[in-house]
Length: 272
Image 1: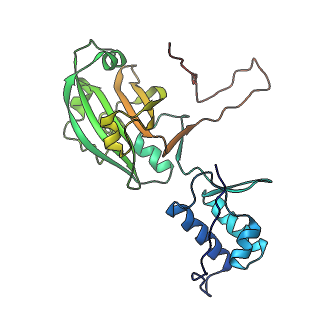
Image 2: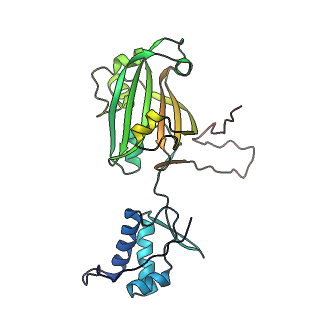
Image 3: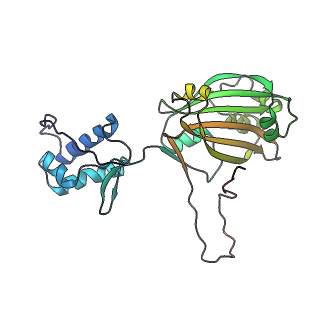
């Protein structure tokens, strides 16, 4: 984190009909969107902004409140205002698909099928799906976007029984969950997750338009039907500069009390 020092050119942006607080908030917003201000950068002080625009501190505070309400900045008592983390934050409090996650975040979801077809299950995929290694499975590779911006790259392996149910379905226009649940009455009821940080493999980096070796979030997920049958195993590579996961936990005042918590078994797994 560093404090940004600006050179201010003569003010040519002022428009008499624009409220003063909107001029201030628009200027700061432009600085963030253009990249002149980056995540965690400190904004000029209220006094500096007041001098820059020739307005009162009340006007500056109103502008900063607008930006804070938009999620663009955060204000820290005694420290000043900072550019907020603009990554998409997701929770793990319920099982959802990518489209549902995007809609919850107010983003327009887009999926692009890059490749699909049968292949022999490797050891990792076979173990996750409860199959013998070498069993035929169906693999679908998709690029995932939110509001036109690339967020993730998916590899999904599906047992052939479920893959047959997806035949002739446009998975750029619908989701696996929706096809199975709405067309075939198969409830996708449970998922197990593993999340770890990895360095982007070259092929994944190319799809995500990031440098080889860039840190990514890898989320591995196995989903199950109501009958405890594995529906699919998926590896989703998230751009770590775009997506973060968060969880909210509550501490009971009664240590032995049973608390109904929607998140269970969320614990670190350490590698040998």
